[in-house]
Amino acid sequence: MGVAHLARVAVPALLRRPQPRGGRFVDLASAAAHRGLWGLGAYCAAKHAVVGLVRGLACDLRDTGVNAVAVSPGSTRTDMLRATADLYGLPGLEKLADQQLTGRPLEPEEVAAVVAWACSAESFAVTGSVRHADGGFTA
Image 1 (cartoon, one colour):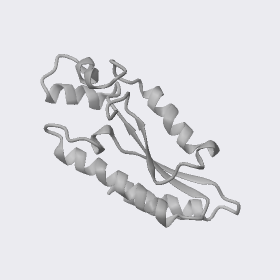
Image 2: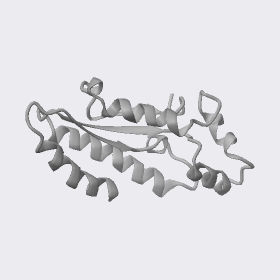
Image 3: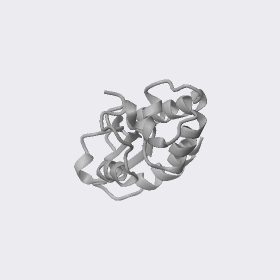
């Protein structure tokens, strides 16, 4: 519900901006939104819901100058990835990146760069879609 609550607050604020407006609603989904993962069914469902909400929101924002985009990171070097490695009984988080074409976990700054682009004016043509920052996990 966090994404829905955020949208309820952020979108009206973006729409109050003067014309011609150019705002971005960007939220994080996950590579798990696009594939099932063992032991993480509820997480996959929640992230799939993020994608659905962003797509529907983009339709609602048609012709307003405000776009909605989801960014789906893959295995990123974070505390959450360490916890996932523990859940799977892996000795380290590096093994989780074996499914990514990059062959290594992503750094948070690499995912942040995709989010920053999605927030920029250059991303105007992208709305109602997902930017995969997953190291090729969903290729």
